[in-house]
Image (cartoon, rainbow, N blue to C red; front, side, top):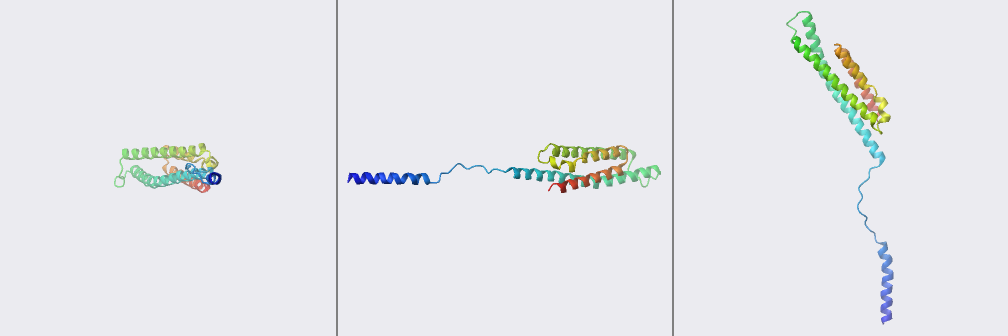
Length: 173
């Protein structure tokens, strides 16, 4: 009887070992990993968002710039013709408006410089940089035109900047 009991215990132990080794062990939960392609797509999406933000900013700026520029032009023409009824702006106000427009164009150019740099220095976005390259230079031209008092030409240069940004946005597929 002891022999049967010993055999029964041995039999249980032998069959219990494989069952224990087949049970599923839980490994600690791993954090979800992001693949290189997903990270790359996230960078491209961020690049598109940066360009879109610049387009929105420039569009709003150009809307305001056109109105202020036209007002300054009308006030200067009225001042040149000595027509006080049309001139709603004093010479000081005209000068201040021109200075603000020049400063605003300089700020736009600085933002475009930053955008170009972010693409040039980002490994994922570098391949898209050629489609964006030169927007800051166009804005620099607008800044020079505004400094020379040619605000209409400066506005046209900024419109060319928006066009180039739009083309760059399309290139980021």
